[in-house]
Length: 184
Image 1 (cartoon, rainbow, N blue to C red):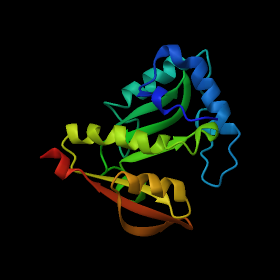
Image 2: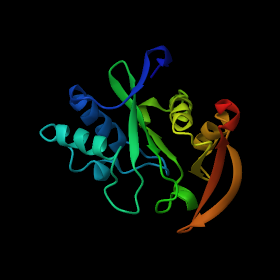
Image 3: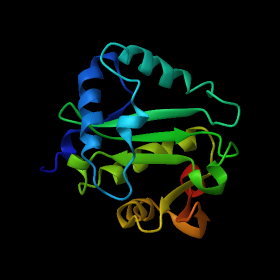
Image 4: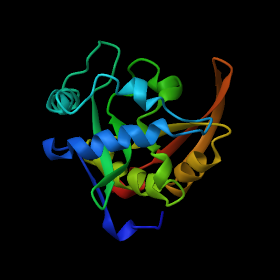
């Protein structure tokens, strides 16, 4: 698939995005990479009939976390020519749950058909000013040690490797991005 970066739009989901979202879930089901998310399982409850409920749920998560040890979060989706290419979750409370240990402020994923186009790099670059607006001066992002593409994305956005931790047999690289210079 060619690069459509000039047509990249990063935004929250709208109710009109239902069919694009169903295609996005299907695209993930074709993933054979070792770092895939199981979107079919993750989004098992989402279908065309209840898509509006899903959109409402993720909007509520922006102000109230579902569980006490979860962070509030805002999800943004990368669209290229009306298709959803990926998503980024901005988690606002790093002190919650496992986020400081290894989960990080930001989580993202690119659907298989859209990889290799630097979309994740653009999404992280889009997200960082959102943290600055909230006066968060340092953002932590993690990646599996073997996920070179994700690590390059973080490094391209100014990520500095702090350390590597072992979680359930996996090595997770913890990076910090300093936003203080940009906040002055």
